[in-house]
Image 1 (cartoon, rainbow, N blue to C red):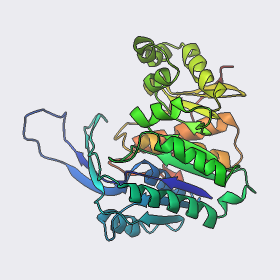
Image 2 (image 1 turned 120 degrees about the vertical axis):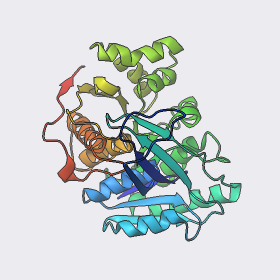
Image 3 (image 1 turned 180 degrees about the horizontal axis):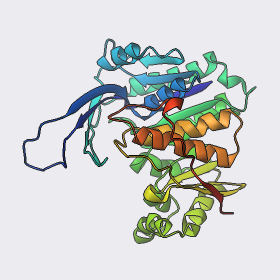
Image 4 (image 1 turned 135 degrees about the vertical axis):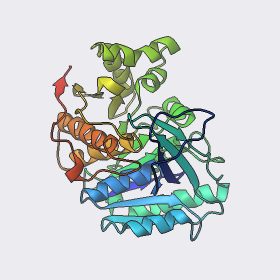
Length: 336
């Protein structure tokens, strides 16, 4: 069973422009799409598209439009466990240009009270128990904690949740996909907060590894030039602190995966980039799909790149199905 938590869900509104975005000008749109989202919701949707059962846990007011939109998807493998809260789901807007450039305008989201935070935790752990993922009988149960945290939630909430999940289900595999303060807080509590998978970009990796700002920002630039050594070294520091796998996204340089067993690099399949909304979430789903299917590290990285590239080739907030995967597979090379 695969469980996702989206603490700060959203209705994702994608608007398409006929040309480059012009600040201060009036521009007419060529398309508008609204879909239920938030990073964990997106992961659950991609998994369901691929035929894997997934349960999405999220806070949402009764009759909130995001719940209506999720129900309208009618995905047979998707179960939604909503936790009643007072505030409405936020609306995030993505502005896409014909060359694939995407500008994201994200609301902060409705704040959660302490009582609502407790209710979300209870629902997550209860769902884990009800789905049988807490039994520890399967090595391929996953919990995905994903996205930003809403106002009111402590920055260390993900670190706390990792600990709670470990207590209830010691054999559970946990992915955390977040950024900024929640990611930094997770790092400060390693190894106790160590998940089985994180997906930082080059700059975030450098920050987590304690590199000076200029060296952190240079990791992706070096990878573009073919120098993956500093990326591997930084990721190994995190693996040494207990994180199972560090999958580093490097823009045009592809991605690097580092585990205790080695390091691998993958090039991105060549696809026309239409919108990058949901690409990172799709890559996380691809990694997990390969893992539950018994794939090794190279296959997990290859599948992650396939799903991320497929999402980037689709308009708006459209999330990929297996039929959307690029014909050309990512080239995976072992680095160490």
